[in-house]
Image (spheres, one colour):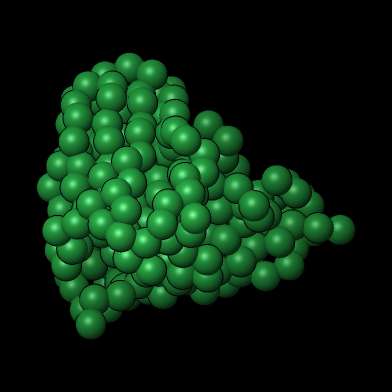
Length: 107
Length: 120
């Protein structure tokens, strides 16, 4: 099983600032990496697939990069609606696995 | 509107069974794979299992934690996917989501989830 490790566990950021979230895979997943945003009481939302392609309707302030085992989700200028938990997920191998999540909170 | 709606959650005793349904609308259900994902209280997301479309054999994959106890099936004529959960354990307590699984393109549609509580 591929283990996905996200860091940091919690990120405290002021509105308007930049946030960088890291995701590491225990073995290469090529570019088969997705990012999701999850707010309490809501369904998760797909942000990025293929490591760097924004899903339909996702604002340009969200960007993804990386390949192999190291990935980054960057939010260029945090808006109030961006405070949430973010998960990476590999879809290169079975079983699909998620990282443990990074909580982005207001500083 | 493209959407998935889960139903069938509730309170169940350990060792008993429960079947969840995932009803799709707004798209051609039979053309897509479906994954189930769960979130235990205070925990992160955990992938549970997957069913391919009939065009790819309709076969399934499961997480080790549920293999042999959970079964995913689909009825394309009704646009419904099912998660049959047998021999339930306390640790199966979670919100269960169904998702439209676009393989390497991610889980692009999610239902709102249904809560399953396993307790005596």
